[in-house]
Each structure stands twice: as structure tokens, then as C-alpha cells.
Image 1: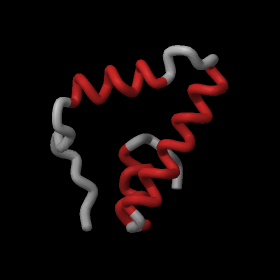
Image 2: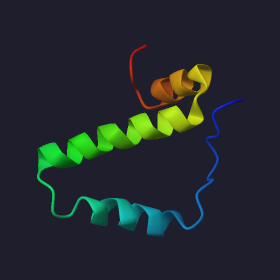
Image 3: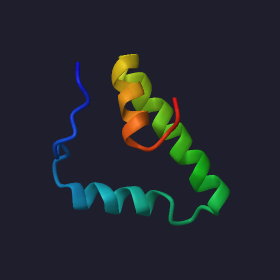
Image 4: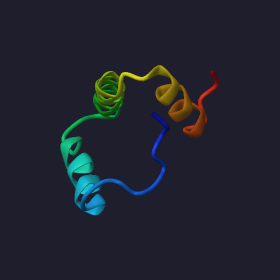
Length: 63
């Protein structure tokens, strides 16, 4: 499986609003923790280490 870099989220503006709204009442630390948890949940869902490694590289992370 290759990392899909093409738009693939139905109604991305609504998703972005939902993401922002989900952190509205959080302080910076809580929002950062939620983002970490979300990344781990989605990485687990993907499951393919090659795809996850590619995503990390595209996101600017050092591997």
C-alpha cells in the first residue's frame, strides 16, 4: 500500500472544523496530547509501517 497524498476526505472543511471544535475547550497541553493520541490511533488503523514511515517523512519527521 502506498501513502495516498490525493484529497481523500469527504468534506475536508467540515473535518477541519470538527477537529478544531474538538479542542476548543482544551489548553495547549491537552490539545497536543489529543493530537498525539489521534496520530497513534490512525497509525494503528493504517497498520502498514512502510506507509506510516512515508507519512512521517512527508510530515517532516526524521526517521
